[in-house]
Image 1 (tube, rainbow, N blue to C red):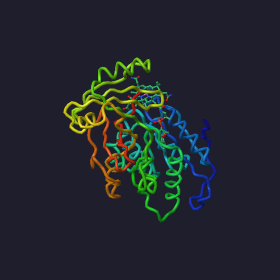
Image 2 (image 1 turned 135 degrees about the vertical axis):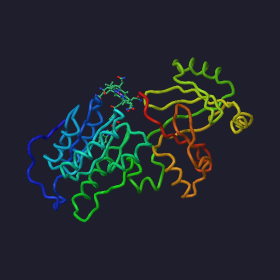
Image 3 (image 1 turned 60 degrees about the vertical axis):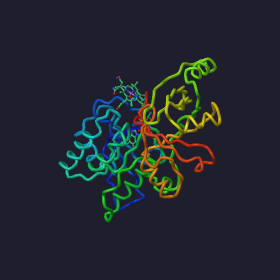
Image 4 (image 1 turned 45 degrees about the vertical axis):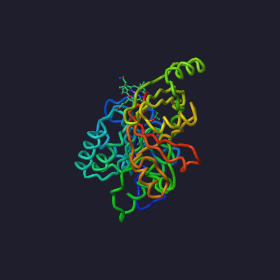
Length: 309
Ligand code: B12
């Protein structure tokens, strides 16, 4: 990892062709440094100058380094859960130094906290599996906006996908494949059959009251799962079983900010079964599109509360 700690040459904010300077900070006792290193490398590879604080930087030290290094953007990597208090303290430290430096944050940030970070002046939030191009482009845009004296420093807080507005507006910004589900009559018997066939134990079983189903998951190394789903009071699935017997039922994609996505899809006239998300298995939020929306296949969208280790 390239770090840069010596005093930089004088920088002109009037020269957009000049290199963008970013401070990547790793505040507090959070020891998860992979994301910070990956981002620092991606920004550097995109031609930016990157100062990486290393692990366990204090918030005052980050603010002081940002001022001393005259950076265009501060990027914080926070996987400890302390994002709110850290961002509040950073805002205080920056304003004490009369510095106006835009801040972006990446790491494990529950979607419910995005608005709080926005209130604290954070310009963009990136969760796990954020595409590096989206991070680079957003940092570039924020740095360039700052460089223009006529541009307001307030930039909307968004996740990496909704930030790419044109893509988000035109499609479903799925971060990955989540699972394929088979509907079965006898979940115990089906689990035994699949455990035997795959030679692996079921990873998770639960009753999902909101959907009146029993669910069981076999997990695979790439994060995708095979789900078995058996109705107990779910009329749609009972009918499905009567008509088709045990059969492939739906596929599911992982997305972020599911309710905002559903609103966008509804406004485009995409046929939805759920116009708002509901609680699904494993504590995730889920919603189904009508099969008409996806070539006859039932498509589920899943917003994970947080990634599981
Ligand atoms: C690997 C890992 C570890 C490794 C860390 C190795 C290392 N040197 O980084 C080890 C085993 C040490 C570890 C330990 C712990 N871990 Co851990 N760990 C993970 C895990 C599985 C992956 C994190 C990771 O490296 N991802 C890969 C990187 C590339 O992704 P990323 O950091 O998310 O970065 C991406 C984005 O977030 C964003 N981004 C990140 N930073 C930045 C910065 C900027 C500026 C920008 C723009 C974007 C950005 O862009 C990146 C690329 O897309 C996560 C679960 C998960 N799936 O996220 C849990 C996880 C983070 N760990 C967790 C926990 C609880 C711990 C422990 C406390 C467990 C314990 N009881 O001991 C300890 C704490 C250690 C410590 N001192 O802090 C929790 C955190 C829960 C929370 N915050 O609410 C998680 C979420 C697991 C879970 N579901 O419970 N962990």
